[in-house]
Amino acid sequence: MVDRAQLQRLAQEVETLRKRLEEINLRIEQVDVVLAEHTITDAVLNTLLAHDAGASISTHLPIGSGVSLPYRHQDSQEGTALVDLGAGVFGERTWSDVRTLTQQRQADIQHLRDELKQQSDQTEASLAQAAQSFNRLAEQLKQQPPATPAGPPTIEAPPPADEVVDESTSEPQNRRPRRRGMFGGDLTLDD
Image 1: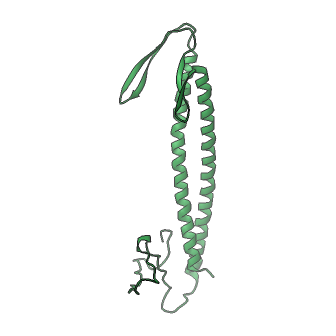
Image 2: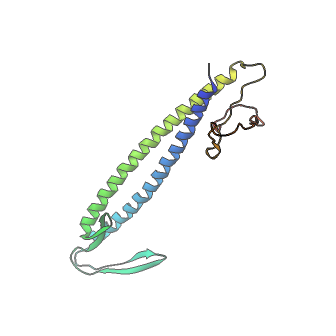
C-alpha cells in the first residue's frame, strides 16, 4: 500500500535533486568561462613565442572600459609577463614559463569541469529515477480505493518556517482546513 508520506518524501527528493542539478550546471558554466579565458591566454602566448628572433612585436592590451595600452617588444630575447603565482602574489616570468603555467592551470580546470560533468550526469540519473518512482507511486495511489467513504484524505503542508510556533507555550489556534485546488487534492511534484 502506498502512503502519502512516502509520496511526499519522493517529491521532496525530486525537488532537491533538481536544485542540485541546476547548481552543478551553473558551476560548469562558470568553469567554461575560465577555460575560455585560459585558451585565449595560451593562444596569445603561443603567438608571442612564435615570432621570429629579433623581430619586434607590437599590440594593444585591453585594460577594460574600451581602453587599451600599447605594448612593444623589440628585443631578440624572449619577453616577460607578470603572472599570478597564487595568493595574490605576482611574479615576472618568461613567456614560455607563463605558457607552461597557464597550460597546467587549464588542465587542472578541465579536470574540475570533467568532475562537475560527472556529478551532473549522476544527479540527472538520480533525478530521473526519483521522478519515475514518484510517478509510479502516484499512479498506484490514484488506483487505490479511498480509505474513507467521505473522500481521499488531505495532507496539510507544514507551516512556513517563519510561522512555526512552539505549541507547548502558545495558546491553541483555530485552524482552517486546507483548501483544495481547482483540480482536486492530487499531489504533484510542486507539493
